[in-house]
Length: 85
Image (cartoon, rainbow, N blue to C red; front, side, top):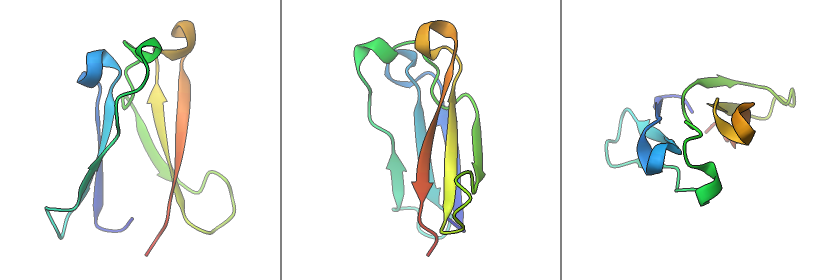
């Protein structure tokens, strides 16, 4: 997790959005989220990002990714666990 940059790209995949993770010390180490189902079009995944220990287990960090137009415009948050090396 250290030395990584997380970027949300709201307009990708028919406005489903996308999250990129780039290693700041190795530019070849780039990951990106995949396209979701058509039902997630216009959900704006990546509009907001937050990094922290949301589960409280102390075993790593979690990335919370906002989707403000998902779930019939009520919005939702996706959580991804990240292992700290």
